[in-house]
Length: 206
Image 1: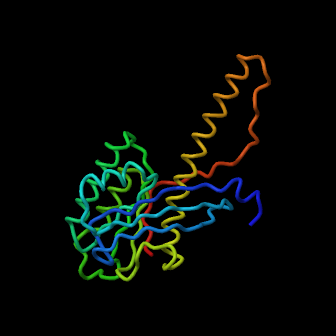
Image 2: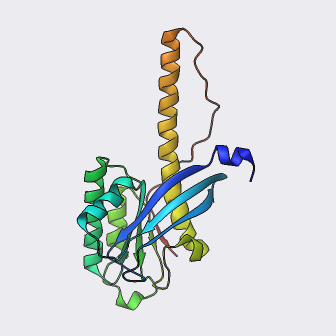
């Protein structure tokens, strides 16, 4: 890997939360490199879905996390209700209505046991302004042991994180240019970078 790749490599902290567990009682933490739209990212991923946590620990995860995968079971209405309370808690702790989030409905292969209508979750995803994916009961949200489809969930979340990071960087550069103008120096001109624009929230079946 060349020095240029390292120079522009960004690190993000992602937390997986929810009532739905694929491997109960196991809290999984790992690092993973992922390339998104030609940009190399290092992800610090903490998967706590389905594990019992002290409130203080959960609050810490929410405070330090930058992006969140909220996982529920399509066979459990209560697991979806828990996601709503988790999102409210994330917004309260981070004091931010626009935290990067992706909703994941697990056990999509158990369609005959579905109790949560897809339309209900899609409506919720539109209300929150976030994408919605469904995955198989055999699928764990683990990047090193997953299919290409699950990787797309993380890529989607990373795109939200990158757009947010780029917007903050642009704001800083505008402030820098403004300060330079007032100090009499030449303003810094940023080379144009096309920003990827996302469409409306969508539902994707993995």
